[in-house]
Image: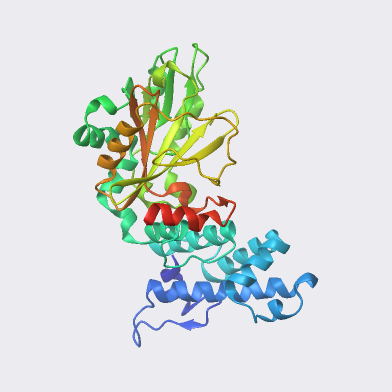
Length: 363
């Protein structure tokens, strides 16, 4: 869309970049993205000048871009959002194109809005994830394959054995089939192509079939521009409740080059979502990611060694990946394999802990 408009109008809106197909080649995505960020910086400074609290050096642009972003984000987050809105209107119009260039623009906006700084090419947790999802790394066929919850089980079976898969009770491939199904009284119903959606049935409660049918209209790529989800076919999978429990602890193991490095434990996910972080020796860390730390004591699983070995084998085909496991201390099952934790938007609590965690994971 951006390039089409450029050729049709002769310039990129707001960029003063002439486009003459006969005289010069079309600008590259890198050039267009550089222009996009330049327009953002101009809009950012315009917003700062409007704030009395920002008068002086920062408003005049004498501070670094990150310092100005942090200042505006601290003083008026709505003004920071307005800077991005005006940037988008001056460059791509009301919508970002569903292209890799548009994905990069979206990722940049999301990153800056959440972290109040620009992403850098460095081995820092969210910066690394940003680079992964804005390059062809996220389109690695294996990453795309395991993003589908049905195909994930094929991968798990091939690498570590089917005994580590949550059993599949049913696979629903069309919305018409939803109306024909009789769901088990206790089960978990979720889409295979979307993250974060599920219906937990514990005692024969009524099932919201309308909600299940609506999942067939969802494309997770359009929610967060994680392109590994873009071409996944909509399906719905039905599974038993894991370990016959409605609320199970979720162990997310961050792995680097096939080696488990850090363990995130989610508790009360559907009640009062909290989490703990541990190193692989089960030493509790004094920080969290995305959600507050839990006050609950989380005992070391009796089968932690098996869980770590499992995560190591499943992560061997990636550089960085998160292996999500369920465990009752006797056995463990694979929940998901997550490529880009939190879509590179989860902030550390406290923020300074991001460097500490990065040394643990990438060191």
